[in-house]
Image 1 (tube, rainbow, N blue to C red):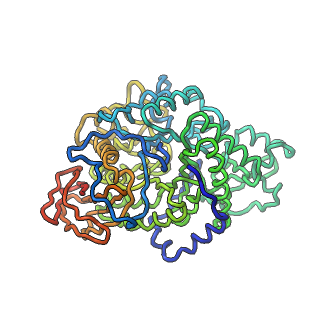
Image 2: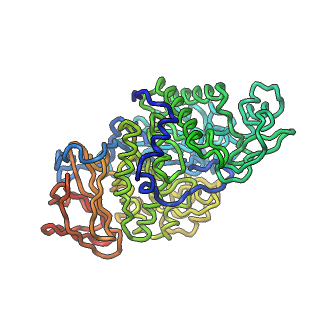
Image 3: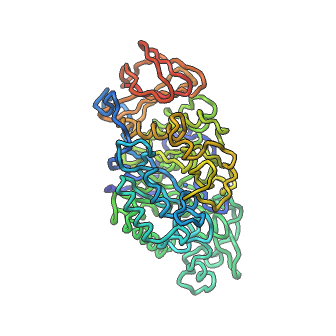
Length: 578
């Protein structure tokens, strides 16, 4: 992807802030930041600007994918070519050597579960991308405090194991992105140890020492973790998240150069991109730093990083963790820095809609959000959508372990624009509530959580009494949550407008039915979700730019009935019309 020159980051931010009438309309949910002893997000793999890998989809009897109901030109925001990503906590996924800890070889062994590369089969998820949570050496179980940026955590394997995983994933049409944590290091990183021990150290100015910079030892962490200052050997260093994660000093050009070199190193190994942890905290370290000037400095750094990565792989996919519910705040980073920013506000909205069985108006908000993002990015962005991730209580726990609600949440997620991210175990209905270990429990492959490959580093107490929420139990059950995910991912790959199309709101007139149009230059479809436990009817209508929808292309969850202009959807059913 070639990036056009952009204006100064500060001027871009100021322009965004003055967008009239948009900010309030684009705010959804509440701020999800929480305190933790690790980096909290505000934080596929085809590049959003390239064709997505082939999904595992069976041919449709109705001939989906043909040119149908081509939309009127200029009636919707631009298309977003996409693929489905799967987020993996390596420690919990699959254990290849029997030590109870998941590893890279284990993921390689289980690639056929994710996508076997054969579009004619239907016993895999059919994802096109994997996001690996941190794989670098670290003293912690989670890995968000790195001690060596160019190596693999020995618990997980070797650099050769990583290269094998990449090769085998690419054979199946799966691309791999990895967590890159550059806001801070571990306090056991050799750079920091030397920086703390010697004031004349080469690495002293790689970190933020209050006394060296004449900064007051005061203020509150922008991450909400109390005081960001921590005492060591008579000095105080900045650690926005906790004392085990000292912040790097990005005002130092040597730090910026090293982080660009590290990014280039992993792209040269064959990694297809990065998920950037704590992306808004590079310069925003105190609550008092939340300003347009600080945001502009963050954006400028990430533009510098993006430019450097383009020299190695212009198609590298970069998605940033900017934990904000304001589209204006997230959008600033789409100005040729990130391809995507995680949509935290949408995640809250989708889970709430599934739980309450009510249309949230998500399509109305997204249509307007994407107009803003398109203007900022020059039409090159792709949204990063999800339900929950490794920093939030699992979606099935939030939905009180109600399978039908989980199926509807999945249906909404997998029929919206952008790259959908599925957190491992979400597809089988795993439970999980904080503390963080509880939302990162071992993936359940068998009913008893025993046997080959099963990880055991954590007891898995949230899922000990969760019968049926395992791969073996759900593998061949036609009504299982796993099967629903497979069907929806296949459907997304089958219908071009679902995978790559723009979105336009379609008011259903029924509070229990969410509806929106998905549009490409060649195809236009109408998506409807009955979020409720009873049948619902909707009168179809035609508005500016809309088509006259006259056929049920696909029905998921039940058989919808279309008589004239009235469609009736059974309980918890989604339909696609053309």
